[in-house]
Image: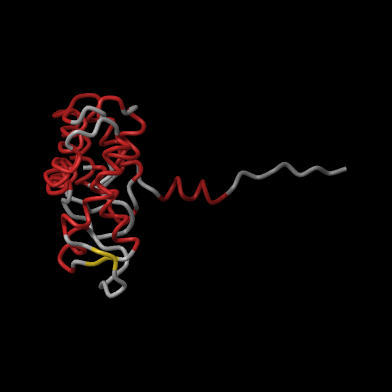
Amino acid sequence: MNTLLPRPPLLPLLLALALPTAASAGDGWSEFVDRAAAEHGEFGGRCAAFLADHRPPGDAGLDAEFLLENLRLALAAREEFPWGATLPDERFLNDVLPYAVLDETREPWRAGLLDLGRAIVAGCETPGEAAAALNRELFDAIEVHYHTGRKKPNQSPSESRSQGMATCTGLSILLVDACRA
């Protein structure tokens, strides 16, 4: 009897070969990884390498300054809020650090949402309390509400704010970004 050995799946191999890693990322990404380690030590380097390794292929051309600002603000918020230090590194890397949710326009949203969110989450003692407070108060504070008349479904925070409207996806992007900030 002739037994065939299972072949490894081809798609994961092709994806692994096609997607750049931190070492092969574009110039902005290489600069970002190097500068993050220099400015923020070993953990900053891990953060930058995580983003580089898991970035969408369409983000190859992102600017190192944009990425560094996102990293600086994420690390500062982790220190500022009482629940920040309680987050495991893996949760911080995967759920707080990213600069985008889907395929929305890439923009520096973190500083503005951090400033706005401070007042909303004042007094919150856990990440869950903070998320609930943001969900309850954010959309009225920035005057963005559900409406199907928006220009596109996956809007960035500034696109939703300039129109004063977003669909479920746009509102979700705003809330995720506010929670990350």
